[in-house]
Amino acid sequence: MHEPAHPPKSALRLLTVEAMRRVDAAAIEAGTPGFALMQRAGAAVAERALTIGGERILVLCGPGNNGGDGFVAARLLAEAGRAVELRLLGDRDTLTSDAGLAAAEWTGPVGPAEAPLPDCDLIVDALFGAGLSRDLDGAARTMVEAVNASGRPVLAVDVPSGLDGDTGQIRGVAVEARETVTFVALKPGHLLQPGRSLCGAITLADIGTGPAALADGLEGAPSLFRNAPGLWTLPALSAASHKYTRGHALVLSGPAYKTGAARLAARGALRVGAGLVTVASPASALPENAAQLTAIMLRPCETADDLDDILVDDRLNALLLGPGLGIGPATCAFVAVAASAGRALVLDADALTSFRSEVRTLARHIRDGETRAVLTPHEGEFARLFSGTEAVAEGLAKPERAARAAHLAGAVVVLKGADTVIAAPDGRIAINDHGAPHLATAGSGDVLGGLICGLLAQGMAPFEAACAGVWLHGDAGLRHGPGLIAEDLSEWMPAVLRGLA
Figure 1 (cartoon, one colour):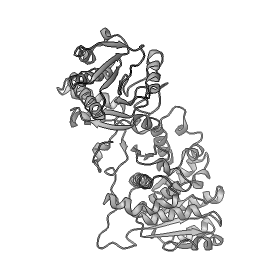
Figure 2 (figure 1 turned 135 degrees about the vertical axis):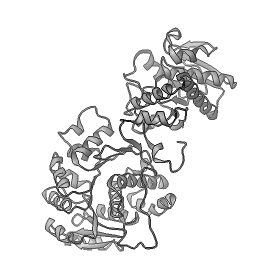
Figure 3 (figure 1 turned 90 degrees about the vertical axis):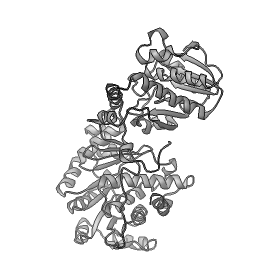
Figure 4 (figure 1 turned 180 degrees about the vertical axis):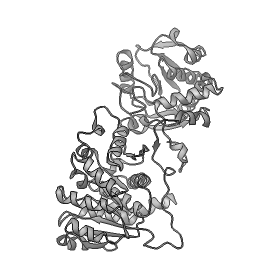
């Protein structure tokens, strides 16, 4: 996507379809004609199409404003000397309002949607925008299937046709675009899968709606953000900093032969900047951990009572429980003690599955301890933990599931995946698109938990620490690329952090 390296927080807001409608309405109310907005949108599409290149361009227009953008783009491309062929889904005579005005300015022929696609260098998809409210069928479905079967590069207008702009889900069938041009702000569907994969590279165009209209559109809208630097700020060091001012993270380890996950997490916490990190494990696992840890300290810890004794030291200000810890009552007891201590807390893996269908019990521990907690489930752990609650109701989009879960648990929820969603109990939601498929490897999530714990130890608030940890984790995956294993992620942190400095 074409954007500054560190956009301001205001530039990271995501617009729902309804919020985008309000932005357009506010801009028009303030004196900008809707047709002027359409002309600017069409011009942005034409500019991108010219950059992509190709002499023969097929423009596919739908019956609404998205089609109007397509008519404008077609006219400008023809004026630029390209051989443009235009197809319309529907009857030209029924086009009204701004789309009708745009169609009237197109002097070339208008072909029927049913005709076979001609040979071309580029297809501009202006059939349907982000506000599509039904599954595609009939001629529209046939048209989209023909586009996908053609093998030609596609430039989509707003979103690939057939994509739900709010959820990223496919409405029956959707165009597979190489690039997408959208306007004013990204929509959730640009970042959520499978929408993210269908959009290709995204260009965000300013069409002159203005900041006042954007503010009107966002009033009362969900607090949705794209996760990126600017949404959060990493802890800063000063000349007076020392290891104790940078926090002390404690990671609980499983028993012998199940210690690797805790070590991965602990190294992540140390590399991201925690001043001290301790791994606490059963005595039988101490030699195994000691053989592979140097800068990370060790403590014996057999039971929840032992953890309670360890936490008498209030310098241990951030805890991570779950990776390799084991599933069952003993882990539930560890979590209860950790939550009652009132420290920053990350719960992952076995610490979540141990509370299968008992999220309200977990929430009570978090609430009673006034704990700043972050939960980091993947989809399977999420389903187990929130089983039977409104967070797993059928048909909910991923951000809504995460938001309901955060409210239920009284904690920040990191719902992991290719489109990781971070949700806070106060309603803030961030969608992460900064990562690589190479992160899908054993132990990757353990490192993520450690990164978040290390940031919490340094004083970051839970939502910001979770967002930053997810982004840093993704950046390491992007920098390494193929061949990545979990051990590599922590070793990329110096380069990742230098890149943000």
